[in-house]
Length: 137
Image (cartoon, rainbow, N blue to C red; front, side, top):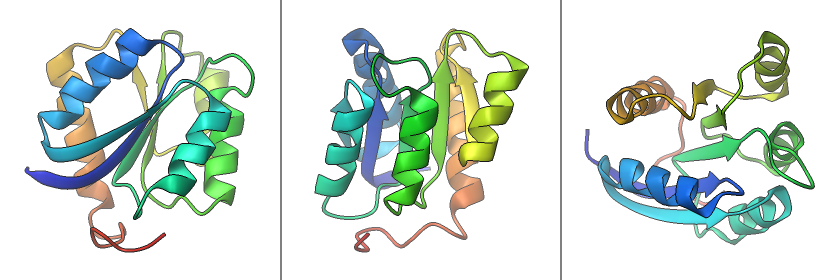
């Protein structure tokens, strides 16, 4: 799988955004956009030149949490897969994220190779419904 396009990574921890950037860049020529919180994620999403391939979104962030950010991104028109990231995955939070429109859930302590495999699966599954690369949002 060699992808080309934009991915938005939202996490309040800079080292997590960097780690995830390195992971997604291994999937192809990816333009990575990062945001440390929900408000900046919405601004970054709106500023993208075209629909992103994927959004990686931390659940626990100060201010607007990841679940509310997910709802706001979906309301803003995000149709791409949104993968929630967390250190703690309670059944209630996972269900809440799915109801809010999340496509997948990954624990942050998941090994790198498994994260890559899961992201590939999410992107392949979305392939039939994702907008063509470069399509306007």
